[in-house]
Image 1 (cartoon, one colour):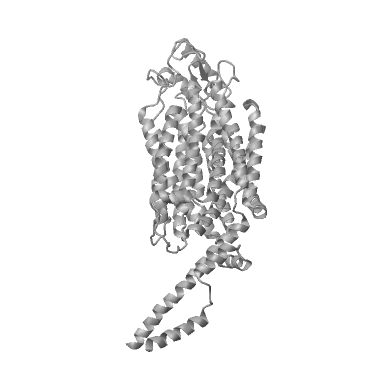
Image 2 (spheres, rainbow, N blue to C red; image 1 turned 120 degrees about the vertical axis):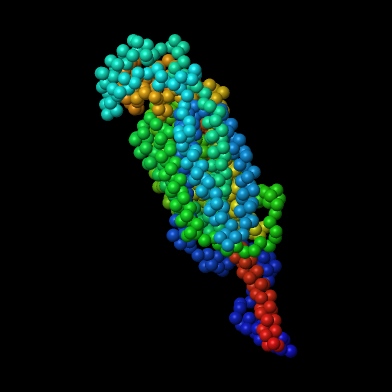
Amino acid sequence: ARRARARKVLSLVVRHSLPIRPSISRMEAVMMQSPASPASQNLVANTEKRLACGTIAAYSAPRMPFSAIDLLIRPARITVYRDALGMTIAAQAMIVSLCKSADFLLGFMLGKLSDATRTRWGRRKPFIALCSPVFMICTLLLGSPGWFFSRPHSADGNSTVTTVSEACAALVDSSNRSSCVELKACIDAAVASSTLRPWNATDGNADGVAAAAPASLSAYFGVLYFLWYLSGWTSSLIPYDALGMELTSDYHERARLFGVKTAFQFMGYLLQIGVGLGVSLAFETDVLMQVRLQAVAYSALLGLCFALLLRSVAERPLRPPKHAPLPMVPAVRQLLANGPYRQYLVFKVPMTIASLLPANLIIDYIKYSMRIEDFNATYYVAFAIVLLCVFGAIPLLISAARRWGKKEVLATTCVVEALLFAVAFAIPPGAMADGPLYILCACVGFGMAASYVLPDALLADIIDYDELHTGLRSEGLYTVVESNLQQYAEIVGGVVPSLVAYFAGFQSLGGCSCGCGAKCDADYLRWSCPADVGYACTDGFGATLLYGEPDRAAPCTVQPEGVQWSFRVFFLAVPAACYLLAAIPAWKLPISSHSHRAIVAQLRAREAAEAAAARPAACSEAAEAVAGGAEA
């Protein structure tokens, strides 16, 4: 009798203190049969708080050093390992493809493990805390091969330094690049005595012919490159990206969050451009030193930014899953059963290839197609223009996406980018110097901003749609697919062009042993090649040549015509085609702003109904506890 009275009292309290709500099944049926009502949409708007500016900044900050490291190591594969140290283009292409293929399955396992992890610190932050220090160490070592290796200069194993006169090197005045009478007299005497070879010697002398790099360099690069990708782009960046998708479910707030994240990403690119330009001026012909100094600085900055994220960003509490986690293969099949996601992949694949190809090949295009000796200066100026335009485009894109929709803005941008790249392909590389190249870079910046800002926000909406149908949040698994998509797009964007160039007859530095950024052993050599020695007042770009045509092109920029065409096609024509292929599926994506509000409203209603259904059970347990206390 006492228990019955206690239950009756508690039921009256619950009835008058809690609103009456429909059951779960009825709520789901109503939401599935009709679009979200205005009241439900207002409920979403009222329950989803805006993210604090400090939270957005702390989350976005690590993207800046990540981007700087990416923009440092990606060209360093060319300028340091291939050109300065002599790794063959085919060996590097095979190593990169093997590393990315091995990392593919590991990425899926990591994403699945991250989704299933439950700790007091969350399910994303523990991976970041454990793996980011390994990534920083790998970045430092990958950017500092000069500590352990140097480029062999001749096929017979003799270094150039054994055939030059140190007495002449002592006469070099680094502050005077245009006049060096005493130095020229010294070199004339050395040539006459056969101590130095003539500038245009073609007698088969081995000096000036680059030797093959040792196998240990390939092993060093392969091991570190694999660990660099595994610890950074897989084990740190996948949980990091998934964390961002979980911070908010509001349609417009996500656009704001990913817009700020993209701004930090391109701030990292701009940071690397500024710092890279500075160190390239300080160490003009020593690319090994340029990359080493930046690797140290960016690794330290990444550690500080991740420490700020781990301390300041809290993961959102997750509801207990209704079902046990699926094994890997069924989980991937369930992911691919998501219709909007399949359509998302149809446009994401060609768009990723289109955005990666120019970034991977711009140095080769400038150096070997446009034949510019001081390619670093042109590269940094061009990329600076791209990044400045990206910064200007981000707020415009966010505003346009709010007004016309994310998919509509993205599709329009793809069409414009396809036209721009097609026009640039029709212009001969020699005519691209200065004006046309920089105009193209200004237009490309807008397209790059769109490819980074809008797809991430669209993917977060698709994940909400997936949760509506499955009841599970799988940001980690979706992010794995995104990461592996990036890796395999890089195989197309980096490995395939390299292999095509290799079969077309590519030679590192045009067959020269030094020059074009690879430092020579003598300070009066701009380059040393089989049929041309660039004796000059200093080793700096633009220093007056002492022999031959003073304005002749550097032979270290010379490649066969087939190689030049391969770089031109992959740098301009293929991105034009890929952007055009991405435009149609991007336009036809089914999730719009209105439909996403309906999806989130249904998710909120389901959560509210589940909470209402759980309260009677909790009240019943409380009533029994009260009744038990009364009996006692």
